[in-house]
Length: 118
Image (cartoon, rainbow, N blue to C red):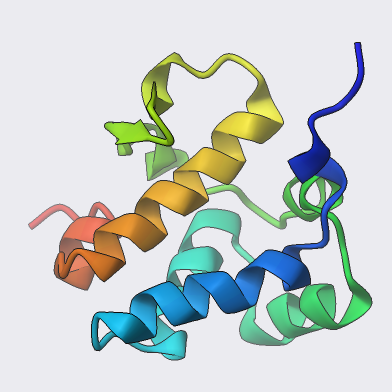
């Protein structure tokens, strides 16, 4: 079975779209970066290096220092598919990221996006 096209796509190619989506709703690049760091465990320097190196999505998630254990709290529909029903691990991570950026663009507070318990 062939890999989905997004797996081999550079994160740096999609990243500007995340930023644009957020900024259109008066959110910031810093907030997008915070979401990515929360999800993957990358430091800002490591994230910048991954973007600069043109790392593909599959490698980006495979090399992530520590995927956040709270990411399984991310639920809902993205691209017409329920995130919690996605079985392919890499696709699930990609859709988690998509869902978090969507929540940011919809104006959710960062505490809720990052699944912080009060």
